[in-house]
Length: 142
Image (cartoon, rainbow, N blue to C red):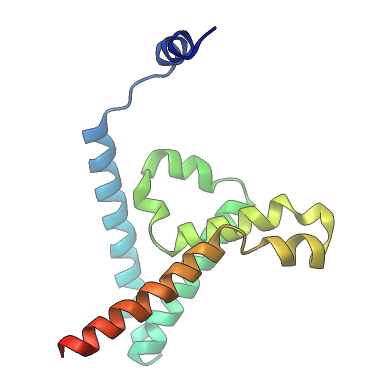
């Protein structure tokens, strides 16, 4: 079997997804998550300062994402919500927790400790690098 025959076989068995529908679902599910974040922030504003309210909201999203991943529900919700769920901090928590769960049989240090940032390490690295680059550009402009 050559590559062309293999591609034809794969195309026959993979269902086509409606791109417009997926975009709308991601848009509205992401919007609902953003709305939930705003509601949480407003609730936390009654008890904390503005910066602490943002931090508490972020922590709640991380805990929810980790719990849903640990319970095996996150992927099911993700298949419904599409990218609207993976973009916020819940996606960050999902990658951390899933890496930790995959390597838990190797122990706390060699397994969980060394693997928890496998996928999220690149997110942290490039977030810091581009933050420095854009901060430098902004300082030149202002």
